[in-house]
Image (cartoon, rainbow, N blue to C red; front, side):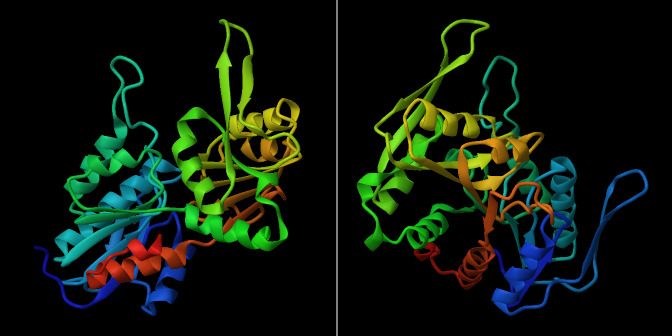
Length: 321
């Protein structure tokens, strides 16, 4: 059993300082003093500027772009805390990078998500707190406890306030999974907002031919809520929105996803798409001037703060869901 004093220390890396600041405000603690930078050759450098001996330490760091730099910062921060005799170290990773490399898609592929889990454990973390892993089974890649928060309660709250239940007919709305792989999470979301479920199925009939988009379910004349765990280049999501309107005859399309990775042409694709509004959680920070007026973020730092409070107090976090 890990022994630690009744002291919470929260430190952050360079990926999400504002997220960590909000957590500290919610917990009513001061942000831990540290310096996380790089040497001239690019090596990560971490200096803890206050004692962590026997403290319950929480290190807040999303492993988002640049993924390898953020991951290395986290590993060095964990090692610094372990060597400074921290009582317990929890890696708070709002967005867990490498989660999509969770299996061998073809021969001789690595399973990088497992490797990253091993590295975090080997560095000295005692537990992990994260949200909406791409595959929930990744929790089993760790040999330490993993608290897996869910993003859908935030979206449920948002959409039930945006479309009040007493002002709309549930039959006019439908939750849509943008691909077959996201059906389980879309079904859980649909159950919470009391809406039907549809699926966009894409397939390539022959080599060198365009993908054919089929809509499984009735979306004609309805408002669709596309739901996914993350958006990277936004190609699949925007194509799904196009299929809903042009093939399925949907009235309008809204979209939400926990993690906004948003690489390459993602912003422009969303801006030019049929999507009316794109909602993300702030597990990955967006640039100050977002080049797309359809995008908005919901703050889940208070949820992480509540989870940290429960972890520190040794109580269940089930009520957060």
